[in-house]
Amino acid sequence: MVPSRSWVAGVVLTRRADLTRALAPVPDGAPVIVLTHNPDLFVRMPARVLLTLAGHTHGGQVNLPVLGRLIVPSGYGERYAIGHVHENGRDLFVSPGIGTSIAPVRFRVPPEISVVTVGR
Image (cartoon, rainbow, N blue to C red; front, side, top):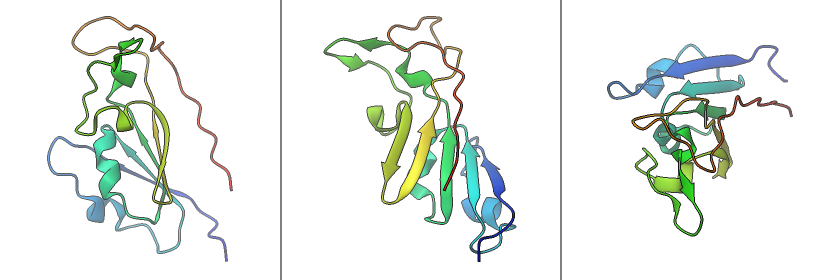
């Protein structure tokens, strides 16, 4: 039986993210999407989460030819810098966003308001 409701849970990384607490109200088998600021949480995401949505990296802001993204504020470097990532049957989407961090510059990483369509 397919659950009639979808759930959205949110976590922040200002301190140790408590995924267990965030997902506690979600019934077993119910589809759930997790919103988090930092994509590094994805490695700890349980299999029951259909989709993780994140930002934080700004896509690296500067993407130089040959050298790639010089600074990606992630413990996983370019692995979770931008876009759709599918790992171990789980999905993550990292939006590059429209702003900048530290330096007000973007190069080969245009600002973007991402539209994500979720389907079966």
